Length: 91
Image 1: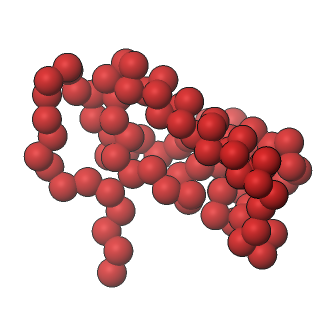
Image 2: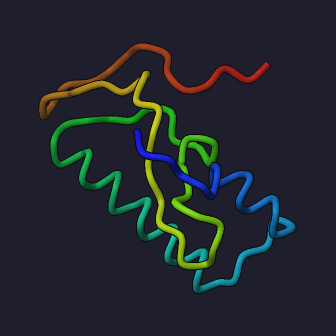
Image 3: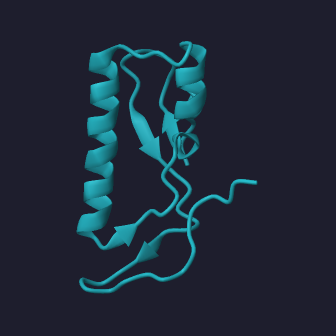
């Protein structure tokens, strides 16, 4: 995997006092939705999407996002359903 100098999305938002400009938040949400749409178009379900699994290419406002941690992902055919537990276990 390539180096992402901005750290994960949670840390990126935390450094900004958990406040992003509306335009930046809108851009991030759009990029995440586009990535998920792309995965779904190939039948891939991530199943552990969270800020800690989204990396930032750098620490600027123009940073790009990279989805990672496909350890719980699954490939499903149309009509398939997954009945296994998924996601990060919170204790």
